[in-house]
Image 1 (cartoon, one colour):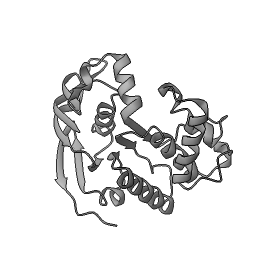
Image 2: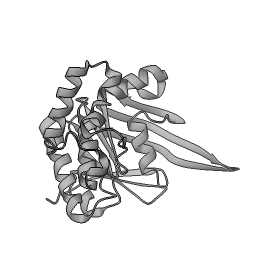
Image 3: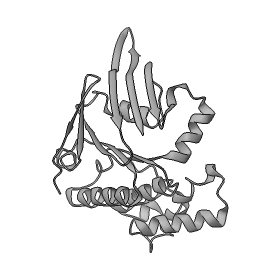
Length: 228
């Protein structure tokens, strides 16, 4: 699935060079579940952006099924993201003027899915996250947990191979956090998805079979004994 080889990412802050990633080597197999932890500014989100093709490394290779994302044109990279990768973020990123159904449909528009099929697939995705009776609700009419469920449905409606989540429970209370993590794990297992999540929450991290810790751009990976 994924193979990262010698991946570096450097930024400039004034005259200072920041090494967000410093020679990362990482393998993630089909169906793996990996959690990434580390201090703020340690490179967690940068690594996730590399996996999602949202940013390019300064050097090194990011291989997805043998294709080096770093070498693709922007047009081809956009197509790979659209077809293969679903994203879930802390802030939900829902369009406030669109209903839950319409928000989920937006993920299918760039793929050229016909209108009737978009509605059917979006409704099915919302049903799978427990929101089958909330299709016509606006984000403002939904709780934080429900909004994140809409965001998860939007990520999964494309039928991706990979689901990437950046602090998906960061805006939720403890009980809702556990519900969302249960949902993500269940859906990824059901659909055979590769799942990579960034989190600062140790209670969430302990549940993952593999835990990657990244500090000052360098990564260590260990097998975990999942809780829950």
